[in-house]
Structures are given as structure tokens and as C-alpha cells.
Length: 125
Image (cartoon, rainbow, N blue to C red; front, side, top):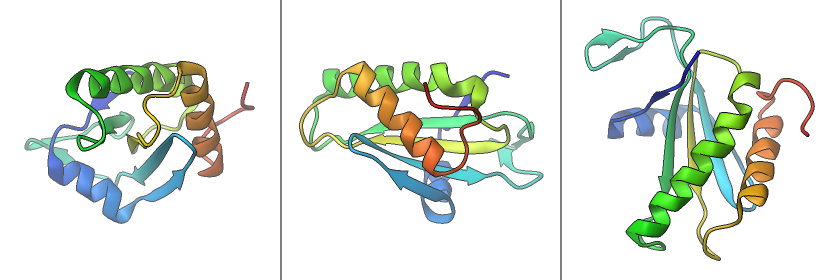
């Protein structure tokens, strides 16, 4: 099933506040298992949908670099999406201390963080 975007600040804050997290070299991953009956914009969220949010720091990167970083994170997530459990909210935040990492490093780091959270099914390859 396709992922749905987290859109509102309170949704991101809920994941940051109540979820589990793991940090890697290039990004941090926050994950929250949704409760039954969670709503988004007044509508109940399907319990099998994965909701995702991608963030890049505005203080460190300009608009072009932030958009590129989010595109890279979305593509890395897309490759791992089928192996992740449903019914969770995921927030991926880039640590931009040294600029934008290349795709392979970012994808590997994302996989390691998800394995650390015991969410990635199967082996990391």
C-alpha cells in the first residue's frame, strides 16, 4: 500500500514526542505506531497506511539543497517501503552538517536506523 504524507506540524510533533527514534551518521528516524481511530483532517486514517514525513534543516541548507535532500530520502524510503510494517508514522530528518550525502550512503544509513528500531523485515542488502 502506498504511503501518505504527514502534512501538519502537530502530526510531526506527535511522532517526535511519543515515538521511538534512532540516529545514524546522516539522518535520524522517528517512528510512532498509530493507535486505532487516529484522524487526519477530520477523517479516520486507514490502519494499514504508512504515513511519512521528510525534513531537512532550514538553518543549514538553502531551498534547492533541502528539496534535493528530501528527494533523496524519499527515493531511499521508496526502496525500503515494502519491507516496513504498516500502521506506523515515520519521520526522516537529515543531519546536514557536511552538506548532502550521496544516495548510497543515505540509503544505507536509513536502512541501518530502521534495523536498529527492529522495523525492517528481512536482511539489509
